[in-house]
Length: 306
Image (tube, rainbow, N blue to C red; front, top):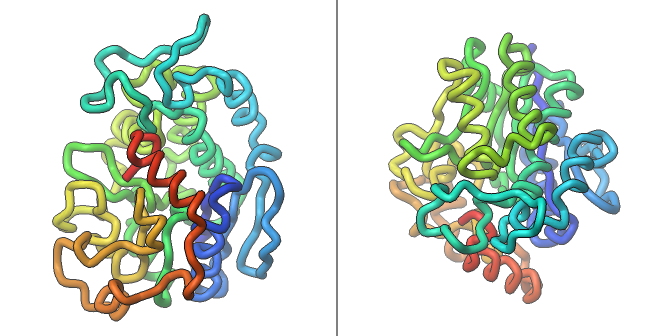
C-alpha cells in the first residue's frame, strides 16, 4: 500500500493566525495513517497529537541557516529595494508592476524555508509521496489517500496547480519520492540557495523557482491539476478539484479565515461552500487586530502573495 506524508511550515507569528487551525483540520479530517510534519522556527508549538510531528527547520537544515545568515541584513534579498555594498541585486528586467518597490517576488530569505522543508521531507519522511500543503489552508471534510495519490500518476514526479503561462500556485504540491528524477530535481533547487545562484533568476520566490526547476529538470514529469479550474488568476486552488475538500486563505483572506463565494468561478455543491458566507471560522473569537493589520499591510505593499 502506498504511503503519504503531508508537510508544512509557518513563521512563529502566524501560529495563532492560521497554522494551528490548519493542523487541527488535519487531525479532524485526514486519514489516521497520514502524518503531518510541521516544520517550525523558534519555540515548538504546545499542541500535540499522534498525527502531528514537529521538526525544527533550522536544526535539520544547516544550509538554510547559512543562507539566512548570509543575507539576513540585505534588504534586497528580503524583498526590499534598499541596496547595500556587496549585497545582491535584482535583475533590472524583472517584474512589471512591482518594479522599484518592495515585493514578495524577491523575498528570497522568507521563501527559502519552504524549499528546505520539502528537501528534508523527501529525504527523511520514508513515504512514497510527500505533499506540501500551505499552512493557511483548512481541510473542511474527510479526505482520502486515494484521492490525494490519484492526482499524481506513478510515472510523474510532481503535481501542481497550473495557471496558464504564469508560474503555478504552490499551496499544494505533491512529490513522488520514488521517481528517478527526484534527487536531481531537489539538488538543483536547493543548490540555488547553497551557491547563491538564486539571485541570477528573474524572481526569487518559491513558486517561480519551482517552475524553473520543473521546466529545466523534469519538463515531461509534471502533472497540472489546475487545468479546467476556470481560474487562471490568483485563486485556482479552490476552483480546482482540491476545493471539494480544502479552502486556501491566500493574502487578505487569512483575516477572514476563509475564502468568499465570489472567489468561486463555478458552482460548488459542498455544504462548506454553500454556507461559507455565514460560516464563522474563529468560533466567535475576534481575529487579532495587530495580526490583521500586519497581513493587510504586507499584501498592500506586495510583501505577501494574494
